[in-house]
Image (tube, rainbow, N blue to C red; front, side):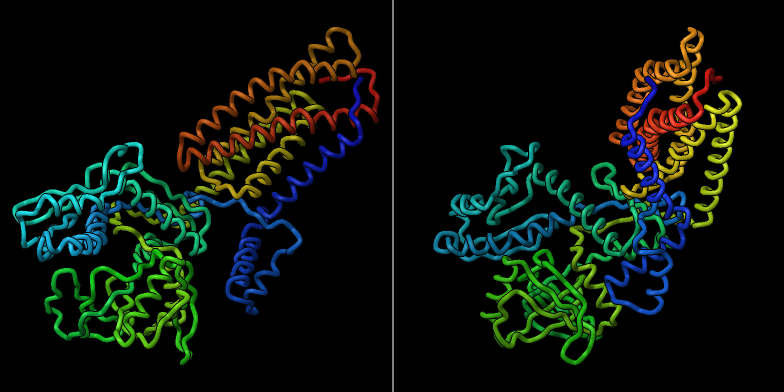
Length: 553
């Protein structure tokens, strides 16, 4: 019997209505985008008359999710960066030196005096005055080695310790270099992602390419230079002990120290201990603020580990200066007046309000573990993106119109039902893309155009099956029911295999390929729903009202 329960009909129409409501903001894209930006700005910085006006452009009680436009549609910046992983080797040796020094000092009666020697980056050389006890010295230093926990480095240690004359030579093992390279690129990838997210950009593409390269594509950014400003600053914050202050830029810092210029005092240089007391990696939070004189500053807070080290150092060095170093420039060198427990403090300097805000953003995002070298950079203007949007609109409109005309001419009234379902299908697809925050690219538009053709394929199978059933002299109600039942297996087979292909494209692909896969996969889901349920509800509702003796498909 050709019958659908009332609750099922209501549920189908509710799903359609919900999809169209969530898709509606895309019809007013510019207005809704201004509303969303204003709401975020009000939450972050407080309300202003201009922001309130922009926020009022769209009702708060309506959905405001939009389909994000990709780089090829919106315009933006494209960068290909190479991570200089070798820099990390030198940093690891610098961090290892205090442990080696303390270990050998405990063996002073055996190894004699110790002195660090100049060495190339990634190598640590220590000279001992009693080389006849070199074997014992090597054994003590080798106890500092840590096993590598990666699958490729199982059974290996992170350092190699050897002797050359009266010097102990410490280098990173090959397995540790491989593991370090991987960690460095992963860390850089995550920090770049956090920095771009902090800047409020929409749907960036940040992917690893090869062993040490990162692809960065950010829609809506004005130029590649602007994007480089967001991610290129290292924001390496350290707190270092001050050895001396000088005006001689050629002054010798000595082994284990370094000469750093002052940011606030031109011509002034500080000799500081190369090994920091605390680093920016121990920062938990950083927020723009004002000091006691009303000047812009940055409040910071350490994690428990950093707070303990910072507190211990300030307690032991009251009356001594220490340097706050940002990207190899001393931004402040205050004298420790008292013990600073709790792990929180303030960074002062010649900041503007905007400068203190930017510094807080960079510190929260973290320090890049190594320098980035930009191998490729491109800026895609919004006018090129608009050309792509216009071309996509024309292609979609032509395909849509051709399918509507074909279905009407071929199936008459039943074709009209299929056309209505097709329009609802497009609305549902954009509603889903908006809800999940997907990015629409030019290949994604191609996926929508393909879905338009595929969406009526299921209806073609159903209608042709109804035609076949009508030839067997069965009544129209029975023919419609059998048409849907017998076409179901073919519809599911075709769409499931295509959906599997879309999933593989998404998993294995990247960038534009994923955009195509997302729209194709969602289009399959919405087209199956509209073809099987929406058209059936419309046909059954029409049949219940008209009760025709015969039908023509």
